Length: 179
Image (tube, rainbow, N blue to C red):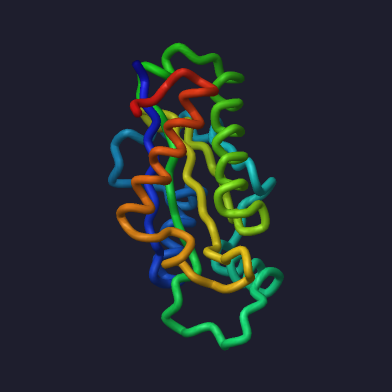
């Protein structure tokens, strides 16, 4: 039986965000990752943005629009959460390109419910690697308008719960996932 995979990490600085942007949007010509097939890069797509974006500027815009906290944001605050959602090769081997796109659109909808539609920065699908996967980025703004990666992402237990919610949700929809 196929399974779903989710990864989440806090991005500590704008410099790291720029590196993620270059990878996600394929802005470099050379990558250490040998799984990237450059002849298939044109198949990659973003479910949030029609064009390439400057992630740091986008983060600042999202914070300006959605942050309602009373305090000044700390200079060392985590403003970006980066993640990945995918499944195993067996799952994608049995999917048409349209089925694969629907899988990732469902993943984006899940992320919008989990983190808030206004907080989603990008949901970029890479079809040019061995296994199709979606990179996503989130500005960690809480329901009450504060910037808090700690509250949005949580600890290891919260991550396990997120993983369980992803697997449960995707299993219901796609019959993939371990409990």
